[in-house]
Figure 1 (tube, rainbow, N blue to C red):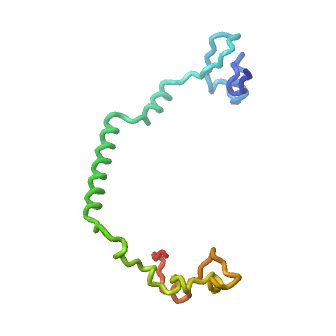
Figure 2: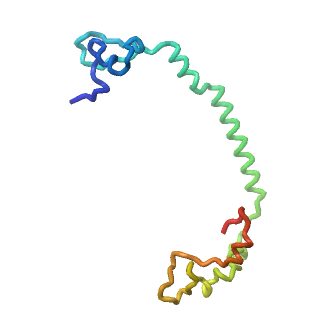
Figure 3: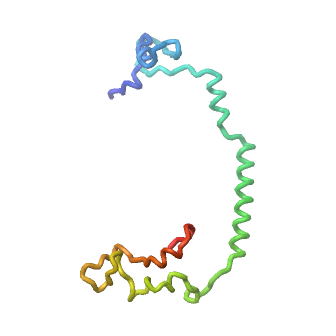
Length: 140
């Protein structure tokens, strides 16, 4: 099995010199000069302390779970207070009142009816008067 250059064993510090111009920057351990296993860098206590500072503690986990449970409780209250519509057919949606969206009046972007031979079903004509009534927060 051929090893990639990244994992070749370090012999006489050659690889560390290639990776950094200053060989004193990295300290490498090697069990022997002829060892074929990859060498591992020495990790300082400062590095370990720095990495451990990002780990979650039991206190962090308990605080996070209490925040989650409280947010879920408020969501349940909001859902229960919402009006429930049992019969969907009794609801009147605003888009059903627009004349240009009624099946007989639907046109493509060039104003052609469905019966026209060049009608494009991928586009929709929206009247200029309707567009002028819209506000930036209104969605179609």
